Image 1 (cartoon, rainbow, N blue to C red):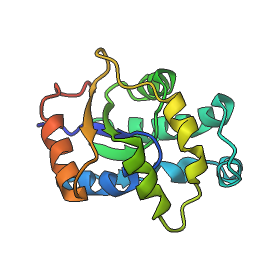
Image 2: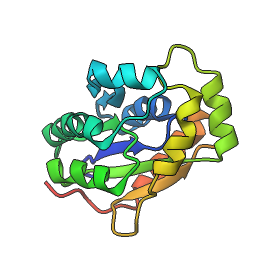
Image 3: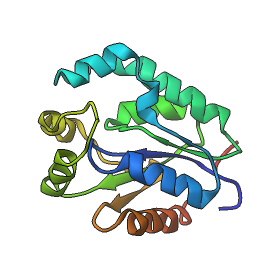
Image 4: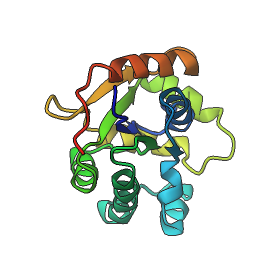
Amino acid sequence: MNTPHVVVVMGVAGTGKTTIGPLLAARLGVPYAEGDDFHPQSNIAKMSAGTPLTDDDRWPWLDAIGDWAQGRAGLGGVVSCSALKRSYRDRLRAAAPGVVFVHLTGDRALIEDRMSHRQGHFMPTALLDSQFATLQPLEPDEAGVAVNVTGSPEEITARAATALTSLSEPTP
């Protein structure tokens, strides 16, 4: 990649977006933004209570991430965002047309095990089923790559960086 992409690291809770995102950003030499930081407090309270977010809850969050991504257009950046539905990714692309996605994928049992060992995160494992039920994987017409989360964070990051090289240059 000659011109840095703005990369959205996506996937269900527990796939490692917050771990892989900063590692990928460092590897690409671009800034990282934690998608959870864009959530309003009301969303965090709902998720902490085990209540799945509605689309109406997510729109302001997605708009804030889209604004950040648009501000990084042509400069590159990495942001984590579950981006589980096509409509969510479409909204991000509407704000920042050049974004590409790295979809972190994995076996449900592995992801649940990783979630059960996290400390201090507001997303309980009880919401994992709703995350998988909501997930709409990347479609062929979406700029992005799927990367399996088996292995160490460094191995996953290397696979993601390699996969990204297959994508065309971003549009300004």
